[in-house]
Amino acid sequence: MSTLDEEERREYYRIEDSVALEINLLSSTDQSGHQAMRETSALFELLSELHINEFESQHLLRQLDERDRVVSSLLQSFGKRIELLGRVVAQTTLGKLGAPQPVTISEGGVQFHSDTSYAVDAQLSIKMVLMPQASALMLHAKVTHCDILLDGQFEIGTEFIDLPDSQRQLLARYILQRQAALRRQALESKEAQ
Image (cartoon, rainbow, N blue to C red; front, side, top):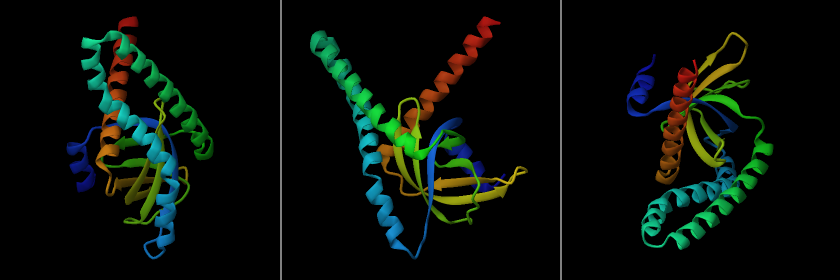
């Protein structure tokens, strides 16, 4: 195990999950790729901001619920409608990204399998849709390892670069929610036996 893997394992929680991905190689000499990444990220940024805003407003809704339950219920209803619209947009985006694939993800990076080999230190544009919340992220990452697998595919490990704090919070929240859901499922299956 590399030093980076050991450090990341200590610094961040990781989960195995299934997410929709689109990976594009960014050339260090071709700035048009970096510009295209910024331009195409508008939809992803909007979806991300939608989820961040919802997360940030939760404590306000709890405070309001203590004072005025009717207004709080109305705002929660509006929030659900907006979330549904976000899911519709994300499903449209998912159609362009393709089927979800297995990954190992943390706040520090993502590991996935690919038909394409990437050089260590190559920079990638990663579009990712986290399900079922349909949270969309547009990330910039550096390849930390690229190992060939027995089936001819490559295991690609990446480290996120310049991850905005809002997206890091969204990713952390998603990881914690998925961990809690997996624990609940494990407990329920244990109790069923």
